[in-house]
Length: 236
Image (cartoon, rainbow, N blue to C red; front, side, top):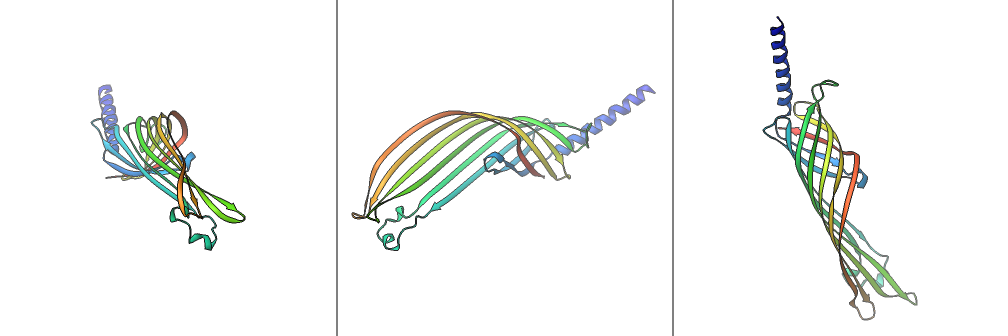
């Protein structure tokens, strides 16, 4: 009788484990919202199966572009004499980021339903960004616009990082999953900056270079986020 009970328990536990793993199988695509402390951004999320049914390959991809323009309050009579490049100042920011790694899942059926999982993993990241900012300074002589100084700052950077992530995944339905994630992040940032200032004179209607500098920098970064991301995925 004891052998029969033991065999029954083993079959039940094996079936429960197999059923749990089957619910994890399948590719997933989705989005996650992250970096809430820095205006936030949207990442595309991809998960794929591995030979171990409780381990998933994960990839994240994001691209962002922001642009703002500033138009000084020029007099209408001055606008006809100003070169187009001095009529406005623009700020542009572009970034592209890619992350990849593996997630290890553990079912939390002891404290909740069989649809709740804890996961953890190491994620590698690489990112490129470029920021260009401009500023216009108007110079007057006897209340008349005499010259315009335009400063240009261009910064490009390469970020290489490693993240330790931990989170909770809930299978809201057989096809839809939601999750919340925390993380520890660290890495190195390599950057280059170029500053240039030009001046346009109203009397000569010509522009000239005033100064130009270039510099390189290397820095380390580390941060922690209690809520690193909230994500949604679709299984297919």
